[in-house]
Image (cartoon, rainbow over all chains, first blue to last red; front, side):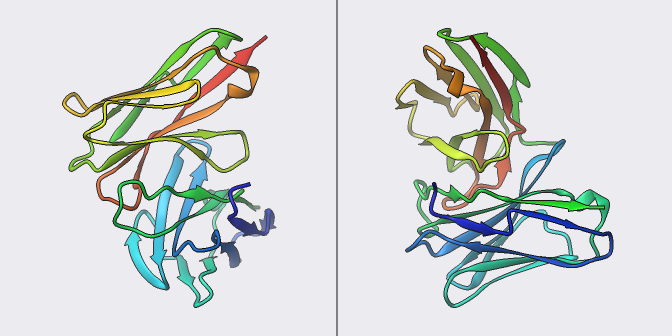
Amino acid sequence: DSGVTQTPKHLITATGQRVTLRCSPRSGDLSVYWYQQSLDQGLQFLIQYYNGEERAKGNILERFSAQQFPDLHSELNLSSLELGDSALYFCASSVGTGSSYNEQFFGPGTRLTVL
Amino acid sequence: KNQVEQSPQSLIILEGKNCTLQCNYTVSPFSNLRWYKQDTGRGPVSLTIMTFSENTKSNGRYTATLDADTKQSSLHITASQLSDSASYICVVSPHPGYALNFGKGTSLLVTP
């Protein structure tokens, strides 16, 4: 158990819908990262937040958005869902940024299926 | 083009045997390289983290090597166990603090 929690574990929805994925980082961790893992693409970095502020952006679509709240939990919002958005979404957390040994701890993931 | 290439894509070995997984990268500048183990349907778990100045790092039966000049890394697994069956992912970070470049992983199956 990494200490990172994600809800829900599974999510099934239809095309065009909007969903929200939630992540609670490990106690004391200020950074939260979101990743998408598709079968043929491997892990793709989406976005990072540090202490409530957006820190880095990866391959995140405009239909996707995220935020980190004052209690440090984070939400990833996916809208106008398409079939290709079906994937595992992982959240990871770390103590901070700026150190080469800033290890990331991954949550168990949310499996999103878009029908 | 992916900046982190892993080989082989998949590998099957007998329990007790050793194996070596390869990672070649073109990421520049380079801050650190990590190897993760990911069991099916679960989140990745960190095995090793190396900066450009480190040549080798061990974690139990896992030993990672790094040649920053040739931009190659390897993960050697000794005396494999059935529980080693998983995907092994190489991740290269161009900046301290966050990982951006993931390899597609090597899928390892250890059979009795």
